Length: 147
Image (cartoon, helix red, strand yellow):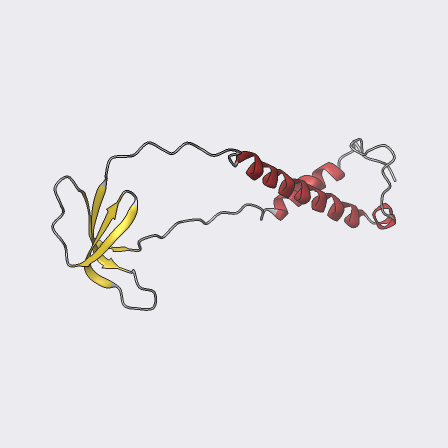
């Protein structure tokens, strides 16, 4: 077999890889995926703090009042109609029926014509699902005349 210029001297290829072109491609794809996973783990490890962080300075008390036309806050039950959500320092402090009068200095968000789902986080991401793209890149390298 014609060895790649990326081969490590003395590297022993498994016998199946010496005979089968598809097996070589699968081996390279799996190796690339393992390297990607290792790099991802390394990035996560390196981004975590290694010593305790000093406490953040106290932020001013921020209060937000959200007037919701429909509020889904109880799984499996009908949504509440005309509700008020009070958020204090980034956390939901209370949920009240009806549109409550906001306290002085509170920021009001008017969603009377909207459906509100408190606490919903959009965490939809694809970290490792582009297998076809990786296969295409590897095929172009293995099919090149340089090998």
